[in-house]
Amino acid sequence: MTTADDVVSVTGRTTETTGRLLLTARTNHFVSDARTGPAEAVQAGELLLASLASCSLSNIQLHARERESGLTDAQAGISYGRDPGDPTRYAYIRLDLRLTGVTQEEAETLAGLFAGSCPIYNTLRRGSNVELTVRTT
Image (tube, rainbow, N blue to C red; front, side):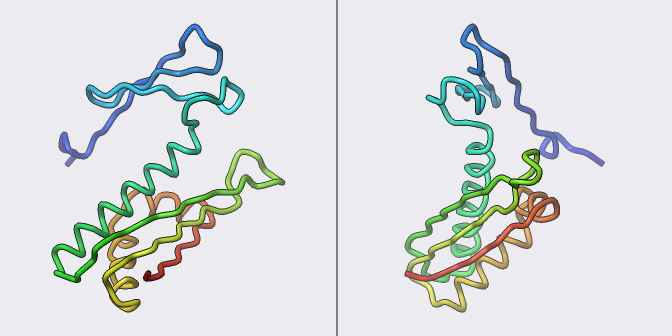
């Protein structure tokens, strides 16, 4: 059974500027540029990486709080490389997590809890080569 919480939608429309898009999520509006557009606003691939950063950091913060693990800071560095043989896919997506205030063992546990519960991460992992590393600082 699908509930209202299971369905999320974003709408988009073109603007008078070629390659410039106006996107709306709930009541939030933001501008995005196509890869071939003005290159002033965030682009689609960057939005994908930003969604993975948001999911990973919020998920880790939640699990750390529930576990009372002592996490004081979390950072995510995320990058992708376009497949040179097939420009319609990414050759890799790299997610580098840096967690502060926890042991390496706890950092790995938190990363595992994130990886086991984030639909964005798991959808990407199933369709591409996703590399996840976690380090403490």
